[in-house]
Image (cartoon, rainbow, N blue to C red; front, side, top):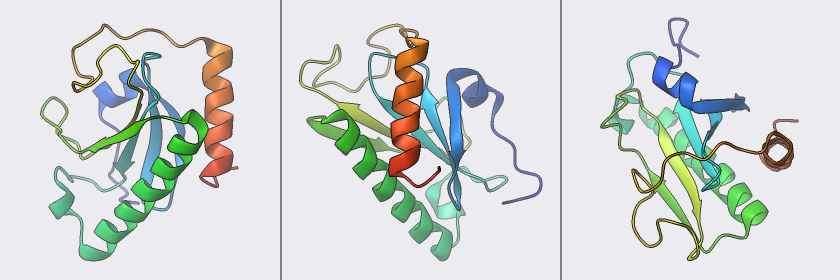
Length: 138
């Protein structure tokens, strides 16, 4: 981890921290409309995937695959949306969103369709526990 790395204040506000993989912090977006995770590589100044060296890029893909597989297995979703946009928050982060054909935004992207819906505290803790087991965080 970069010693001067810190999570952007916007991502801090919008997420729940699940834990750290070798490269990335794993976060849950505070929106119960969608099972929505973020991976944030702990590298200071990284804005684009190309800002990571080749080994880190490969590690990021490994972590996206691990988290994506776990999310798909837990949610039984119809489709995974995986994207690194960063138009609003420039800090490098990768969205991994479980989509269902019945979700409020389907088939459109999730951004701006519905205001965030707060999670039920017990449900989100069950989801986080299942996810942590599947991605080897404890």
